[in-house]
Amino acid sequence: MSRLTAQAGGDPTVREMENEMLTSAAANNSLAKLVQRYQVCWEVWPEYLAVDNKMRQVGFELELSGSDKCIQFNPTCSECLQIRLALEAIANRILEDRDENLTIEFSHHEQSISYSAARGNRPDVTLTIRILHRTGFTDPVDRCEISYLERVKTRLRQLGVCERQWTRGSCHQSEPLAAAQPSTTTPSSLTKDSVDGGQYQRPKDLIDLRWGQSASPV
Image (cartoon, rainbow, N blue to C red):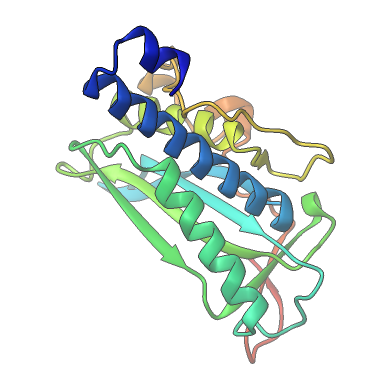
């Protein structure tokens, strides 16, 4: 029995809370090992939609990338499958708390391997998560989407996932995943070039190698 449970006199509610905390910490540690094994990184770009003959930002696209030295040039190999499963497990964890006002879409690039100069042109298996409005899908990006993205980014950092490029010695926090503070960025200030200092722009150095096709710039 832990000190917390002993102090509470064996209260079943306290025991349940303690068990949930232990389970959460164990899950985080397991995922953090996958993050280290596959050197998982994340990037974010704006999601655009043509509205009234103009491009409007309506949400965000979050991409998780993982790699392994065993990957060859076949995106359907067993190593790629294992990485996809790891990325999906990480995504399910960071997206546990869904917002009823948002739609979260997954996109598996099962027939492709990506290469980015930011990560030394290593062969990457990727998983894309789109954060969009549930209703009014043509509406501009708003504080709800921004706040949710910030919470997801906080959880990624806690698991040791690195932004854009892998940093040797990346660490994680073992406590339950915390919620990020609401972003102070206003929706009206979000543009292709201004969101988070431009980091949300899709890098021009990203190459996507599709199975059976030659590599071509995105």
